[in-house]
Length: 265
Picture 1 (cartoon, rainbow, N blue to C red):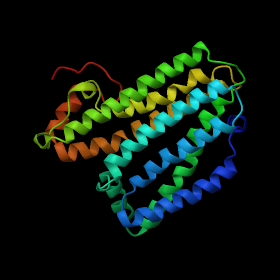
Picture 2: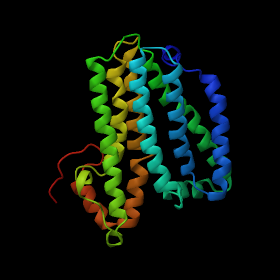
Picture 3: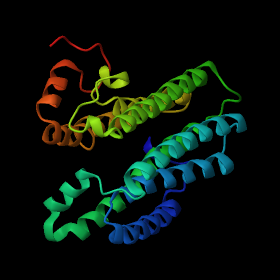
């Protein structure tokens, strides 16, 4: 099953290239001491793989153009956001600072391992798009239109949530306060919700492929990672430490992940 899914992408050739790329990023990050270089690198490498699959892959040209365009738009939007707000003249994300403290004497080795973890992550997530591009059907179907709608809702929603948070944090009067307007009124982490929703866009696009049911693995994994591992837990702990009672009240009234009407206090 999985070998068939990843057959449109040359795993070993990309693996060697990506290993060298993220090793270089790790070396560059040593001076800046900012592990967000890895996150921006993921977006860049993901976009390159998707673009190559779109240009050289098999499958209908219109579908390859559509899906590679979706992947590139996602990668450029997220990568530019991360670069502007976590890398360029910015201190390291507190989550990575905490990880460095935990690693102690193993900091350099641990961070090198984190950068190299981006290699299988890039291959896994870009592989989904390369697989969907290889669909033998000609032209754009109604299922594909549904996927595009989900994609647009997700990418626009995440961009709006990020922008609302940027504007809120940019106002000195909001220091120590909690954003509770806009999309943040309905979810404590709308950016993570829309990030996970984005990967559902490729499920209808995969319908008709052999083993198309496997496409649900990607959104479930992304949602699980954001909800229980790399996203929500770290953000919640950081918010409680910096905003205290203000954030506890926010927790009582607002859903953690899925957007919903706020509860009364």
